[in-house]
Amino acid sequence: MSRTEPVFEVIHPGMLTTVQDLGRRGYQKYGLAVSGAADAHAHRMANLLLGNPVDAATLEVTLMGLKVRVLKPAVIAITGGDLDPRLNGQPLPMWSTVPVHPGDVIHFSGCKSGCRAYLAVSGGIDVPVVLGSRSTDLLGGIGGVAGRKLEKGDLLFAGPARVPADKVLRRRLHPDWVPQYPRQVEVRVVLGPQEGAFTPDGIATFLSSEYTVSTTSDRMGLRLMGPTVGHKHGADILSEGLFMGAVQVPQNGQPIVFLVGRQSVGGYTKIAGVITVDMPWLAQLKPGDTIRFRQVTVAEAHRLLREYERFFAAIKVWGSSHLSA
Image 1: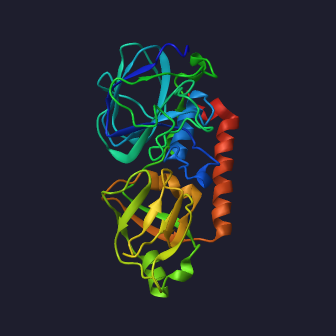
Image 2: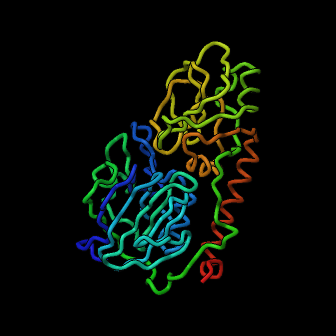
Image 3: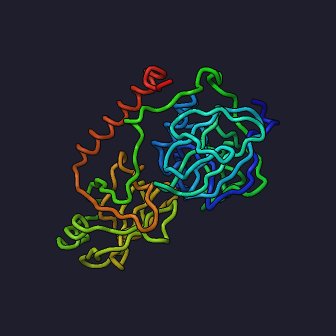
């Protein structure tokens, strides 16, 4: 596709839609957010269906409202939360490849499950690479489309397709591999790095209670409401780097789980970290949904990550034999 011919025109940007890839690595030490797709699994699967590199940029659609007009022929795939995607008013299959044509309108009309959907196009969304990534960093105001969320009238381009359209049409992920997004999840955590700053009762409360996602949650983090997690001597520490999935507990005892859009450092105690393979479940939670935490060891977290990456690598290698036609 030519860079001079856009593939989509934004008719309505929805609640929050941004361009994301797998994030901007290596710049957190300079104060920049890593950013990237909040649900990396759904993002990677959308690209895999289209034969794109798994880090090609997609549109991350939050909850509802995105409406785009197709300006040139393309093949798309939509994964992640079910935000009721429609093509010209008709239901649009997810976790599948779909051809679209000039004049078609793609609309995410409302949230049925999950929180974030990923709209991928053959060749990937083509925006300038900034510090090694096309991701939108809303805190820093860089990447994506002028460092901001999409606005009405934005024109979006696609890069050159790596696989011809006729080779990826009618691909769909096996139903057994399509994740469901419940409103109550249990995620696994490794305690630390400051679990010693909490009372034994505080740790027990954290691991045995149900927490509700608050309305102040966003791509930076999930702010939770529930039983208070008690500290021994207060919540303040010297500011240090914040890692993906860090569970910080400020003075009020209400946990915050940090996601891809988090700031680079934080100065409150962290009781635990959510393991990598469970992060996509957090990305699909919305206000009112609930979380429970279960402790695992570092060795178990590593084993689960290796198992996941083997699963994903197998799909990549076997390609069309595992992607039903």
